[in-house]
Amino acid sequence: MANLTRSEMRTEVETIVDRTNLSTNVNTRLQWSLDEIAGRHPWECLHTENTSLVLQPFIKAYTIPTTIRAIENVRYINDVSEVGGYLEYKNLDEFVDLFPYPEGQAESAPTCWTRKGSTILVNPIPGTDECSLVTGTDSNVYACKVSHTAAAGNCPITGASYATYWALSTSSDTADTWATATEYFCHKLYLIGTLWPTALSGDSNTSDLDRTLDRAIIYLAAAMVFEMIEEEEKASIWQDKADRAVERAWAMELGFNVT
Image (tube, rainbow, N blue to C red):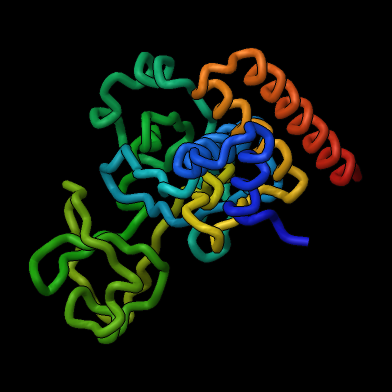
């Protein structure tokens, strides 16, 4: 059995509030409910592992992929063997206090991280031991994003497949001259965390959350609609129902995952 569609969820909410003239408002609150419930617990269906962030010399800030809601752990990995240690997490205030000017420190493999808005900050700042930098045929600097042996086909920027292996870099470190048959490499940040659920923008976009949470999403959306139309007592009742539905679903997930 699949999750309910947005239309089916909306019909359930409209039945609860006994109103059928608030479709747009209900759709909005179904989305709000989905996002809120997704953040209540680290639901297994939203677990993600991401290796898209390539370390670049002299770059301390890395943009978090927009699909990721929360980050639990960050590892430093080799692009080929994908092994590496966990970076130590520090809250932003502690990170800034400890490393007020990381650019002035020696470049090295990162050992700790923090989150600042939509970016990850690392310390120490990577150097050329963490990523190959070369000058492209257009005189721009490129950072390796996939470890490989250089050949004419992956030369930046004349090689037909160069974009698979190289990314335009803003690093201020000195770049090498690209040379064929050279082993180029990169290291990456391996993010472990949870995703934002797929937006409920239509009936084809059902919730990424397990179908056991459909009821909680509907109940919470109903509570929000009651709040909107200023029926506070009913809003409180359906908020409580939603909270209980979420906790029952979480208890079920924990039970299924016992080893």
